[in-house]
Structures are given as C-alpha cells and as structure tokens.
Amino acid sequence: MKILVIDDEKPTLFMFRLFLTAYGYEVYVAEDGEKGLALFDEISPEIVFTDIKMPGIDGIEVLRRIRKTGKPAQVIIITGHGDMEKVVEALDLDASDFINKPVERQALNSALARAEKRKLMPRNQPFEFSEKKGENRLSISVKGKLSSSAKKEFLHLFKAESVCDVKEVSLILDNSFSIDRSGISLLMDFIKDLKQKDILVIIENLSYNYVRVFQMAGIDKMARLQEALPDE
Image (cartoon, rainbow, N blue to C red; front, side):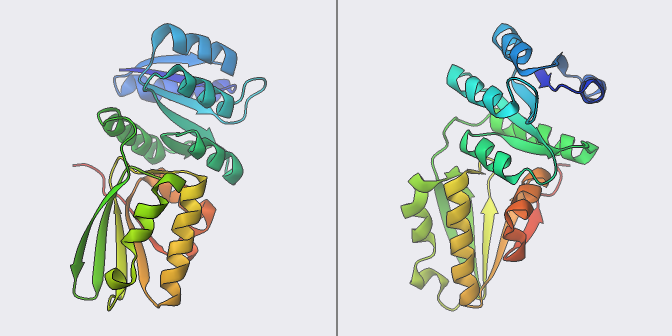
C-alpha cells in the first residue's frame, strides 16, 4: 500500500519513513504542499499524512485539493496541540483522522488502523442508527457522517419516548463514523439536553485520535469518552 507524507520538517519526514517502512508500506515523502500534490497525482496513494501548518500550500488546502480530485484517499491531518479551529475546518473537508505533534506511536497506529478500515468501506456512508433499550440504558449504534444533513435522523434518536426511564445513553460509533462542524454542534446540544435530564452520556468506540478531537471541543466535560479497544 502506498502512503504519502507531506511535512516541511525533515525530522518528521524521517520518523514517518522509518516507522511506515518498517510496517511494510511503500512510503513517499514531500517537503511542501506543492510537491506533495504533484506526487499525489503521480502515484495515487491510498493514505496521505499532511501537516496542517506549512509555508505556501498548507495542509487544509492540500486536503481540499485532494478531495476535488475525487480519488478515495484517506487523508490524515498532522496538527499541533490546540489547533481546534483548523481541526474543525479539516473535519468539514472530510479528513479521515488526526494526529498531534510530536507524533506518538500509539496515535500513528490508531490512525493507520482506522484508515485501512475506512478504505474498505463504501464512500459517503449515509447516516444510520439502530437502537437497543435495556433496563435503564439506551444503546445506539451509529454509522456514517453526522452533519447538518443528518439532523432530522439524529434528533429522532432522542425523542422523548426513547429516553424515557433511562439513566444512561450510550452512542456506539462504527468505524465509518465521521463528524463535521455542524455535527459537533448537534452532538453537544444533544448531550446538554440529556444532562439536564440527569442522563449520563457515554460515547464508545472512539479512535485514539478522535478522543483528542472531542477533548479539544470540550465534549469530555459533558460526556464519558471511551476509546476503541485495539484489534487482537
């Protein structure tokens, strides 16, 4: 499998090449966005890592142009700590995942695992859910992208009769799950509403890196976040 890494810092490129080559990937690197996009057109990699802050063409523009090609590459954004506005902008452009600098091995492994799973899934997975109600608990399995277009279906999840007599609501996220700016607002409004009813919200099966994104958005202050268990 081909992986392209775009970053203006040579130590970061060296680290990615070292780790990814050891994992058995065919690794290509570029030191700026312009060279990265040219290499993307030439080799059509399945996975792209791109730094969010680079001189000239930054990571957001790289992501935007890759999405315009229509090629089904999984694009993983490399961010600095606290870059919430840039992360949200990348979510709006359907970034596959995020990792923070300095890059941790666990974060890299999580991003690769998620990208490989998503690569095998149909593109533009519609927002879908299924409910299972037990004693004092409502479990909801969620697939697809949570955005403004899914507002009607999302709000239907939490109609009064669904949450009646429950003390806990668990959202179980499929590997196809993604979210954008409007989806984050929907999710936070929903959690606030349930908290007012003294209902605990648990969000399960979050990737290691999506946990960090939700923490930056402040969702961890309102709901319990549970990271996905690693594959055996």
